[in-house]
Image (cartoon, rainbow over the protein chains, first blue to last red):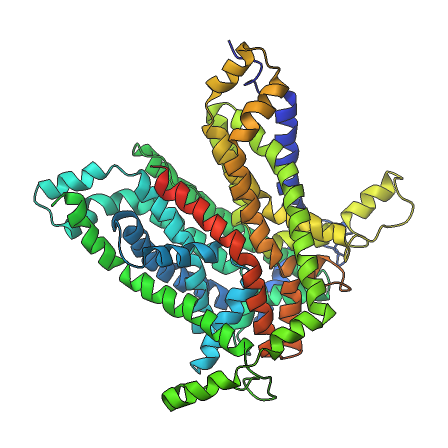
Length: 271
Length: 304
């Protein structure tokens, strides 16, 4: 018999439903209006792909989109590599000197205000006399997103049964081979999810990119941001819808990856 | 030697590359912020006079220390603009965190009470917006809140108001944007503690005669406090330095510290003052950051 104290009440259901509606309604409205034929963003003039045509003939926007996609791909790959190594060090390295500093450096960027990260990296690039553009933004995004990858992979490593690695070593594997043959295949879903998260975070960032990019190389969010400041434009609705569609595909792949990992009898990594 | 110890050595070697990366691109840049916050403004490119030149070695270093200037920090303390924007940031962050708790708790609570197989779906539904672009979600609200936007149309059609209400460039719009953007950050840690709670504790409370409401306040809520703390810090810290949301949704008559820093940097090109503002903001955030770091580490390492 279910006790009164643990039952799902009507209040529980209502707050859940309202909460989810609040989270999703604005995005649904945005997507619907991107197919609006009218120039006025708020007047419905029938269905149309007009604003998508507009976007695909807007050279500057397309350049920005290309820049964003390449920054996101390169920085996510670097971040996944570095973040996975960091997670292995933290989850399997036991105690070592500078460990507290290391984990502190990896956890703080998760909540650090972006204006500070952006400003500090820009000052470094200026001091190094680096030409600002694609690579400076990529390095900045790698630094931020590798911390997210570390958290995702580390929590996966923490739930992994360590006796598997130890058995492989008892059977004659050296640690590196034990890692590559036993551990790595088991954490691949978390690594994939980490890459996807890094990619979408990079695609989303406007503040850090504004600080670290140079003249003439704006990312898509920087361009969207400067357009939005001038007012709502239907073309932006279309671009946003395309970005949402891309992210939706990524989420499907990432959740498939984590399903795969739970099918292997381990709990999936959060995110 | 145990297998675990043998495994630890290459694992530590693996950490060298990310360690160096974080030192170079996270720690060292803070040194530069600190250094430039102590130097003078110059109308040049870059717009500051360096405190010291690396090439000149130790003598220059000694000279440089004698030239360190706290003028920028003095300015921060004297000019009302900065003090007011710090205060505003704190007020906005505290208010938003309280609203987020009030809205997020019932949602997380509802999630934790769902049948097991629906919990995963609900969690996915809360995480998805976190993946969706932050800027796009704010933009979606601008669409709705603008003068002839959907909200005003609905309110006019229902005869709730007779003239369009100004929503954009107000504090309410900013709070709405902040709550909307940070809600998943509040819900997830709350859900994580609430879903791990032992249901038999509540059954015991019920058997001993407490009403569901009493059981909630005497058992559930106290046990969920770690989640409340994690969620509150996860929201409070980034909201203090928030830039995009107040810039797009709030009016321009009072600024948050992130906006002031941005303005000094990009519009006034006063890098030293912007850096001093960043250092001050960071100092403000050190206590909550340390607290958060402790909670995070306890969860990842202690909970095994």
